[in-house]
Image 1 (cartoon, rainbow, N blue to C red):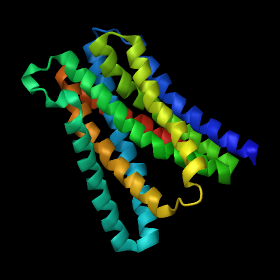
Image 2 (image 1 turned 90 degrees about the horizontal axis):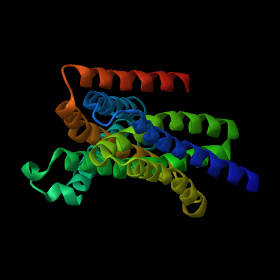
Image 3 (image 1 turned 60 degrees about the vertical axis):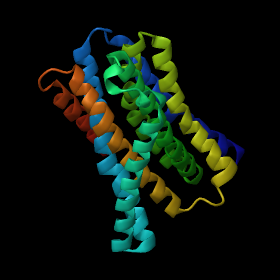
Image 4 (image 1 turned 120 degrees about the vertical axis):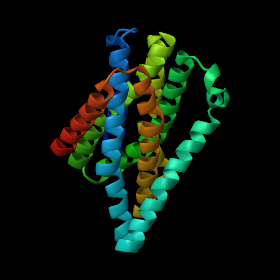
Length: 257
């Protein structure tokens, strides 16, 4: 039993560490290469939009429909999804830099705000993912490994979404890596919470609610933060190709895993 718990925690840590790997990728992009920054932000938006609508939200709706019936479950899923968007808006509003008038913010301030907001939202997203990885690993080690690898692949571009704007805003590799790693740390913390607090009380309804909220939060980040910032630094259709590339990579990873 102890070995099973340890393995489940390690798998969750592995999945979360991939966010830091994505964060390190920012170091290979030239600081003044705004075209690469724009495509990178578009890529991250594509990843988040695709995984929200093609995996996370359908999974949430299916779970809620299984509990409450087809129609009521679907309505609950939609309502909670938009509730996630409202929560993301509140988080955005409450961040300190948001209260500064838009015209007083220079581009560096906007980028740093974007990076910190993305890190916070992804930390919220990573917590239940770590919990899910842990629970799956406790039930079936093979299933746990598959989920951990899939989550790790998803987390790499998410790490890029955090580190790119912070790196370009501050020029600090340490800060970019720190915040991306910090958002990934929520993954093993979610696993630890599952072991210490939730193992006996967690049920399908909680997973359905969490994943519907996550989908809404991630869509808000993409549409309100990532894409507008990407267009600000982009040229022509580079942002769109970044979005399409992110969707393609996520689609392939979901098909493989």
